[in-house]
Image (tube, rainbow, N blue to C red; front, side, top):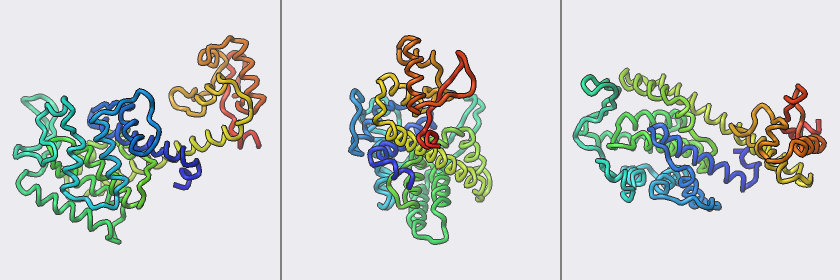
Length: 345
C-alpha cells in the first residue's frame, strides 16, 4: 500500500484497475472461459471513474463481472447473505446473454436435486473427482457457512488469511449452484481478504496466481475434499499462492515507480517520438519489452527509421543517460534502461 501510494493518484488508480482486471480475466480462465479483455476493462473503468478506452464496448457479461468484483471488494463492510450470493450469481450469468441463457442453468437460485459431480474420462467409465453434498439440507449448510463467515470477522483467534482460505475451501465444497461455483468462491475469497485488510483498494490478483498453478489447485482441492477434515495441506497451498500474488504485485508496482522516476528525470531531455516509443517498451517490460536489451537492428525495426538514424538515436540516448550499453560489442551490442539512481551513481 505504501509503494502504491507513492506512484501518484492516477498511476495508483491504473494499478488498481489492472489488478481488478487481471483477477476477473484469470478467474474465468481457470474455468476455461476466455473473456473480452477490452470490454471488461471498460466496464471496470467506468465504475472506477477512469477514462474509457475508445472503441471498447461493454457487454452485459462484462458489466456483470465488473459489478460482481467491485461489490465484493468496495463493499467489503457489508454482510454476506444468501440474497447477496444470489445477486452475485445473477450478475455472473446475465439473462441478456444469449449463449449463457440458452444453457440449462438455474440463475440466481440454488442447484437442483440431481447429484452435483465433477467428472472426467470416458462416458462409460468416468472418473469422479468430486461430488458435492446432497441437495437436501443445502440451505442449512449455507446458513452455517454464512454464520461462520460473518462471526469470523470479529473472532480474535482466527487469522484473517486463514479465514479466507477456509472460506474458499468450504464454499467450493458446498458447490451450491449449477455453475459458477469456482468464480463465486474466488469472489468470496477476495471479499474475505478485503475484510482482513479493511481496505477496498486492490493491488494484487489472487486468481492470477491460482491460474499459474491450475493443475495444483484442482489437485490439492480434490485430495483435501476426499481426505479427512484436516485442511492443513490446502491452507499451506493457499498461503503460498497468496504470497506469490503479493510478491508479483510488489514487482509490478516497483516497475511503475521506476517508470515514473525515469520520466520525471527526463521530462526535459528533448526526446523524439521514436526514442520515447522505444523507451516505453523497455520500461514496460514483458514479452514486448526486450528483456535482454535492444539492439540497433531491433530499434530500426520498431521505429521504422534508417540504420544510420537508429545508430544516432541510440548514441543520443546513451549521452542523455537514458540507456546504458550491455557487455558485448559489434552488431550484437544491446542497450537497456539506465534508471536515474544508476545514472547518479
